[in-house]
Amino acid sequence: MLRMLIPALLFLVTSLHAIPPAECATLYSPNSEFSGSKAFEHIEKLTATGKRFAGSQNEKETARYIYETMLECGITATIQEFNVDTGDNKFRSCNVIGVKKGSSRQTICLTAHYDSVGGVGAVDNASGVGVLLELARVLAAFGCRESLIFVAFGAEETGLHGSRYYISTLEECVKDDIVAAVNIDTVGFGQRFEPGYVAEGAKLKQTPFWLLRKVYGISKDMDLDTEMYISAVNGHHLGRKLYGYCNGQHRSDHIAFLEKGIPAVSISFGPALYSDQGGFLHSESDTPDKVSKQNLKLAGEIAVSLIEKITNITPVPLQGAGNLGERYFIAEHEGELYGMKYVIGVALAVSSGAAALIIVLLLIKALKRAG
Image 1: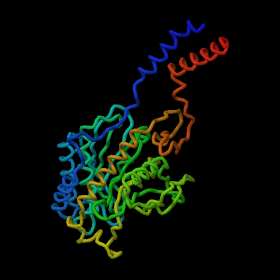
Image 2 (image 1 turned 180 degrees about the horizontal axis):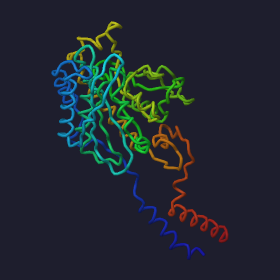
Image 3 (image 1 turned 180 degrees about the vertical axis):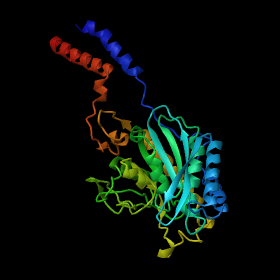
Image 4 (image 1 turned 90 degrees about the horizontal axis):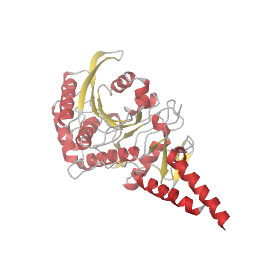
């Protein structure tokens, strides 16, 4: 009996050896490291245009600059125009959408708004756009399974009009394919990492715990000065506090994604106060001299690290599982499992796994008889 099992055991060993390792994303190559200085160059050009009020000619010229920059990075780009009616004013604005196609239907959105209010908006939010465009350069040559979508939103300051319009144009199947949206807003100033998210008690869909766990891991790895206003999300304790905005207090474009059930989080730094709070945001004083190149580099590194962590989680494409982002599970941080909503039996479901199990059982049975 044992002699008969030897060929089967050899088949098992060679089959297991032939199984390719899980695809792992490595975003950086020697010539594509994120540069805070390059991001700052974009900020200088964006602010040189002047005040980028929603619906203004300056906003339109800024959109053209973003569009041309994406093309130069090798990203396919389009301009999406839309109408805005605030009740007090009617105007046209536009989004700039860049797409880097991956090998699967899954997508990750990287977003930032480019309009300003009060002044030239160097920190809010030319800094976010500068980081977005530098990410487009860095990630353009990256071979990733997921498609990367870069969106610069217009008319954010008037009520998230650009992001809400963009999402309204997506078919349901396309929305379901968005694993996560990572928004970048007001990153050029401040010593504290303040991730924007929506937590328990909010009227709209919460930021999924698996995504917050990723943000938590990055803040821990980078030893960032970070603290959340809450210590638990959906009953899961983070084990560490993070500064952040719960219940939608950080009103930026990630909120528009969450409104439609798409996992989203915002990268931000602070404290950067508004003019009516004694700060400089939304005022003439929000100028390029307020922007830290180190902040820009750190924001880019956080975004890259978050993309790496998102692309390295394992999908469980079961029937009726809802949004693709919620069909992911996390198996890291001391072996803990977070956000697992479905039974994972993938390894035993494939034919090679089933064959291996049968062979092992036969071997055990044969050894018992021989003993």
